[in-house]
Structures are given as C-alpha cells and as structure tokens.
Length: 144
Image (cartoon, rainbow, N blue to C red):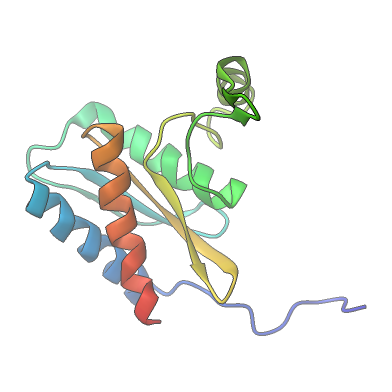
C-alpha cells in the first residue's frame, strides 16, 4: 500500500492559459461573450477572463461551476436518479454546499491520464452554449 502519491499530473499556468484561450476562441466563434474561470484540482482559481460584453452577474457563477466540477470530479448539472433529473436532490446539494455544487451546466473537469488536474467553468450564455465553450477549453488538453 502506497502512503504517498508520486508523479501526480498538475495543471500548469501555461496549461490553464491554453484552456482559457481555446474556450475564448469558441465563445468568439459563437458570438457570445463569456466569463471563463479555470481552477486547479482543489478548486482554487488559476485564471479568469470576463470577455468584453459578458454579463457581470455571471462572474461568480462561472467560478462556482469550475470549483464544483473540480471538487466533484464531474461535469456540473442537475442531480439525476434512474428516472431522470432529481430536482430536490439538485437543489438540496446546491443549498448544502453552494460553493462546491451547482445544478447548472457549464463546468467541466480537466482530466489528464485519468487524473483530474483542474476544471473550467463558463457562464453568460445558455447552458448549452456554456457547456460547448467549456468543452472547447477541455479540448486544449487533448494534446497534452
């Protein structure tokens, strides 16, 4: 049994920049100014950009989406049961840990070699647009 982990993958600032740049390009392509947050595996902010024209009200939401995706090790969105979306569960989790859980889509973990190294959170468009821009950011690490 290993008592410590060695050689864990870490997201560098250059990696975070690549993620943010890729997401921003997608936001420009779809013509929706976004707030984009990139965090490390513990949910700590590495980079943030509020594109010109992005809604100020979405700044905090983008960060919560990124933190939630990093901490939960999964994309943000509503809680689900075998029957579909479980609204009471989704809202209950968000109320219980508002800085670490959101039922709103647009936060995606950054995974390298099966390890979560961080996450991206995007907000200011529709949930579909936010998710699309976040996935574009994730794609920047596919080359890593």
